[in-house]
Image (tube, rainbow, N blue to C red; front, side):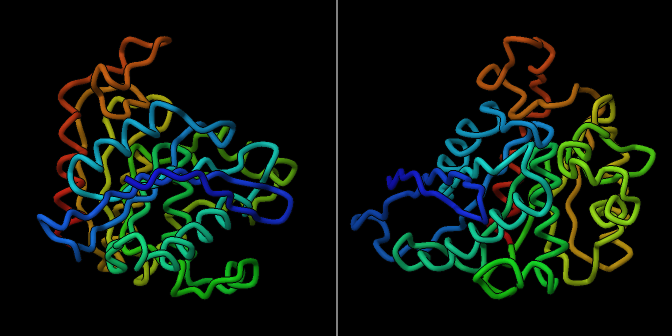
Length: 271
């Protein structure tokens, strides 16, 4: 395995990318090209959660997928800092695709909660001029081939997780036009990549309506969608198993949601 720590610089901010790149075996398939998953942990744009980082990468590796974890910049860094860091990460992966044996048609962004907002932001903004002007890569180089969104923050409207948007926008939180701009259900287009989406119906931190709004926007644009809504579970379940339980909240063990990652892995391989 290639396990490296790589700095991703944007203006005065530095993100850190941790790679979990599987080796090819000459006894199995020395030329194998694997999908790669870029994981964006949640944390309300104020931190990045350990529970939604390495445990997820290890599970992805176990399914034969490369993985990376992006520890992106959070508060006081503001939009579009983290978005530009994620875009540069996708560009970097494409630069290293031959070296890392990456299938360049299956570079996927995966995000939890506010990290889901970040992943979905790249999904809707990848071909926008404002992004191309801020980074050294072309739009096509930073385009994700798919998105896995786990109980994502999406909307700045009535069902908003207000803390995430306050941290994301800082002093510009009162700017209604900017709030609309980062309300991602309003930004979905026919160019939005295929999406795998899951949420719990009883999430009282980031209401499930966030996922429904995004899903409806994808369907209106005739996009590709796989969606799973589980009837029970608090916010921030990660794997839903003992592996990612929280010392602060025993309710974050919810075994019936644990199959999401296996379904997501099959979805990636089927793209």
